[in-house]
Image (tube, rainbow over all chains, first blue to last red; front, side, top):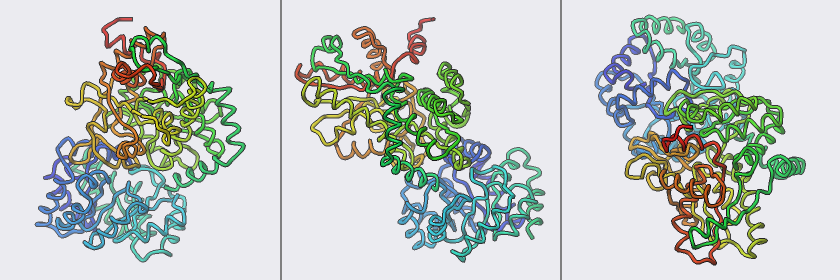
Length: 235
Length: 373
């Protein structure tokens, strides 16, 4: 979460991620009502908001960050801050700041036609989510609207819940692959190196959010070891 | 999204399903107590000395407010969809009580999400829900009020959708909720139309209703949209618009996208949702049903607001003139009546939706007046 506990700290952490072998960094934009997030990320967003972090400060933070790293950056934000900022301005400013892609969990592809077209013309990837409950129609729609990668939500639920290892993921991911050549990354519910190893075998990427945010807040000294253990688990 | 598609299909199916319609009509009559009366408030009319004022008595519906119309219908729908469990958000507790009531009636499991702050303000309703067999889950995040309870209910629903139906309490949220809740509440306006024609032989000149999310107002207005009837929705002006402590989305908000729909929203420049204030928990909400936003922008319905003090005065006035203690929400509509009726002729007909009864608010009002019970 950008700005939790401070922008300075977020910068250090992004560089730490790079050092520990992350391929992509997802930066959260704090929002007052984070519907798709569990308690860990909700609290992180509350802290970041209290520190005065806004979509505007996140974009200028990214511009600064680009002076020191070229690691791919994906922004996770809810739609209302983007809408309020001005959708077209957001897309062009985000791209200019050095953002590579965006995830907007409360913007379904059904409502995202203009957003996807404008993003594409600016070279900004739009990443949409699929879940175990997604229907055939939805899989087609999401794979068509997604660029960069597909975000497969490993659980039906919110971030930070427990991963379901019942064999359904293999089948669903194989099914999604029929519709897209984009990589499929799996997130929500991945927290241990074992989870990561399991998910990495089935998909093209492992997304870890809450587990990192939690360690960062509660036990920052252990974060580096944890990140290395994740990296080792998936290579 | 698949949950919403499933619900949309089930709802549109229910409109053509004779069995569903028969059961619902039967429950409206024998369980909810419909039709609710349209009452000529003679003493209030006399007191204000202008327009002739009728009250649509939703306060006499089972559980004491219009919320039951929607809750029972949605729980019936959930049962027909094969769901085993219903969840809902609640602010003041009226929708929570109505949903818990519906769940008890159909033998479904029920969990109600309620902000910590509202749980403290509405202790009595928390206990009522528990008596009805519901689990009440505290929401300690965000502003710890209604909007956070909706967030939490939506989070629950995303992980429980296969077994669970989310009973949204107002004409808000993602499609099909605004359309569905409007439909289940529109019985208010259909009855009113019949009743006023029987009583006066003509349609009313004004319809007035309070607007939180907007379900009681939409329920009253919908049957009259094509008629030459003036309509006024009344928002919560709290401590006054200039203080920033209010819930008047049209007077102080701008368009946003929140909790699954695009509508007027009280938000800051960065798109974060602002805290709200109203003496009435049922109006204390940062956004408003998207169809109200449409009706406002198209000019079909006018929207006003009443402050806490104006609502409290109206709360006491109706209690004394007609022996009816209104809910603080409905008192906002009555405050608007008090501003308009005196200037209108005695031939003018005004219908006010008395959306709920004030029993739940009595302790709260005593506290505000500094009276120890």
